[in-house]
Image 1: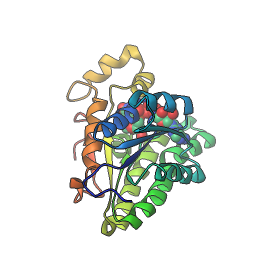
Image 2 (image 1 turned 90 degrees about the vertical axis):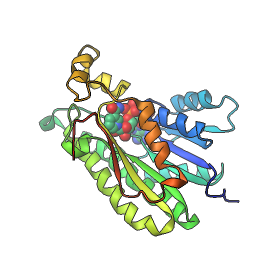
Image 3 (image 1 turned 60 degrees about the vertical axis):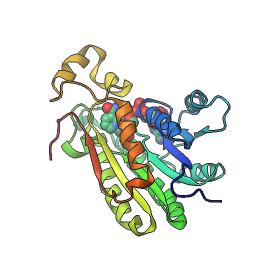
Image 4 (image 1 turned 60 degrees about the horizontal axis):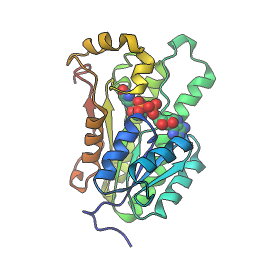
Length: 251
Ligand SMILES: NC(=O)c1ccc[n+]([C@@H]2O[C@H](COP(=O)([O-])OP(=O)(O)OC[C@H]3O[C@@H](n4cnc5c(N)ncnc54)[C@H](O)[C@@H]3O)[C@@H](O)[C@H]2O)c1
């Protein structure tokens, strides 16, 4: 039986074992959703789900590779068993900072297949399911890099995120009449392990000073933005990109 539109249902978050995805899963769980912590790192997903609900009733781990279409279909099949899937957050990504002219064909394919193909497959598969039910909220994690070409990340990462922004628009347009919204959140550098790894712990303070607001972003706030877009009340927001970049990119 489907949940009434004002009530939480199942929320699926890819790449939810770590970083921003874990913060988003935590926030959606707090909002009352049954959360699927989906990640290529199965043990980390299991640990993250257990941290949300040790009893395993309202938080579930699922191992998948978003770059594999069948794996994404398997994620939907898994989530449907838990109830009506009302929210999908396409958060999984490979963040790489290889110098532009040194990016190999294999690394380019790998970054694009996870960061872009994974989002595209999930928008098709979950979008069709949600559209049949007449309700859904899809949020794609884009990046400032997809808008300005990147500050510290590689050209393949930036290109993949630009493609995510385009995919957000085309799926938003396709699904608008079916009660399904598709939006993007576009963070600048966050106070997160991925940024620390790319910038280097010793350079973090200087890096943050060079952001107009003088600080890294807060993943918990990104999770608030995602959670707001995931509410029924966000019905008129679709095809949008909400920025949180500390003033690094103004438009
Ligand atoms: N951290 C930032 O400052 C920042 C800035 C802009 C955008 N973003 C975006 O936010 C999202 C989360 O970023 P983060 O910093 O938390 O990343 P992260 O690297 O800390 O976590 C990414 C997660 O995705 C998982 N993952 C990787 N490949 C996968 C695959 N093929 N299938 C399933 N799961 C896979 C990883 O195991 C990991 O748990 C990403 O889309 C990233 O591009 C982050």
